[in-house]
Length: 87
Image 1: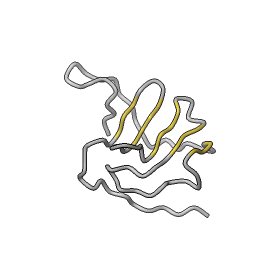
Image 2: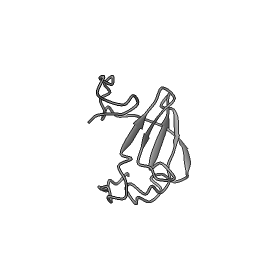
Image 3: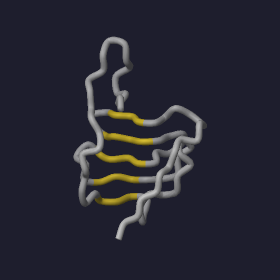
C-alpha cells in the first residue's frame, strides 16, 4: 500500500520545476526531489533544498512503473525562459 504526504516548498529557493527534452525535474538546490528521464521509464530522487523532502522512493535510483497524468506542458512564450513549466 502506498501512502501520500504533502510536501510544501520551504522558501529556500524557487527551483520548483525544470523541463528539458532529456528530463523533468522537481525541486533543486544541489539535488532534485524528483528527476524523470525523457522516456519516463527511470528516475532518481534525493533531498532537495526547495522542499526539504526525504528520499521519495525506496532507493535513490528507480524504475517507473506508472505515470499518472498530473502535469500539463506548454511551449514558452517570448516572455518566458525556455525550459520552464507553468502549472
